[in-house]
Length: 417
Image (cartoon, rainbow, N blue to C red; front, side):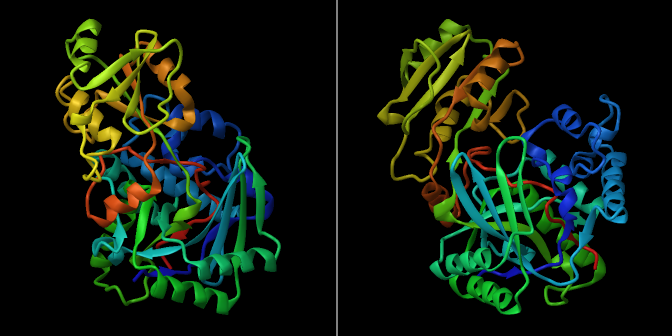
């Protein structure tokens, strides 16, 4: 069963919360983060994207960048902008976006649950991104950002969360510039803390990675590095045995599309590409933007035109949890045979764009000349994610995009007592 523990979070003072909190590191580039943090020394971007404190052409993966992140975090602590709670607690975190509400619990998962597959994964990580996240943990000695997990909803946990929300006023209730409301309650009651921990141990056999495979891997792997270096063990009570997560019940989560853009056509002309696509898809030219409305339909943007690609029955197997996914169909019928893009984790000719940016972002990337073709995907379901994870299967990289996103800087897990 699942290990889920309270911890002493380092959190912003109430009057500084809106200055500190920021979007997660992986939803914007360094230039965007630098612009958002301009004039705000309290912004948590200085911790999670410390390259913004260096010249634009500075190597983002230089050791100096990771050390700067640690320095910036310590400065927030020493200035009293972030303060560590004196008691191990859970935290209830509610997010509301465009009328959609989801409420999770902030706590710590066991690194051993990760290694023993009680924490279920559905994606492989990209080695370069995983190493980047590991270096942030190694140098910072913190879990700066939580991972985003889910679990099969449990009525007793739902009731307990609602009781926490009604028992006291929230510690933070802020609305960020993007219009998303973030509300946090501290679970201070000892009985409630014990109940949460016990319910996860008794009622939740597995926890599922929703968003943050790289952060999950980094938190577990570096935690083990720290434990091995200290000669410790899983029962020694040290913080390196755990990493920070927000866990949400599966019936509250919303997955949106995760789209692809490709730099070139691998020597094919546009006419040749369209001709070859006809083997696996019914190809229809559309009069405007096309957003897939059902499984096995894919949107393609090429030279100013949108196309609807409807996968033919021979291209997928409904009994295969991974093979039935549209991202698998795209890889097997287009990316691999036509573009010679075989490893999505390492190939630099492909990039991934979250659906929150809209179809306009796909058009922008192609129209700029940076990319040659874009593919708009239909989102997978939460049940598909669970089925694949339970079968110990792996989705292709960058399949799920969850909204709303967690805010970073609202709570931090320090790995040093």
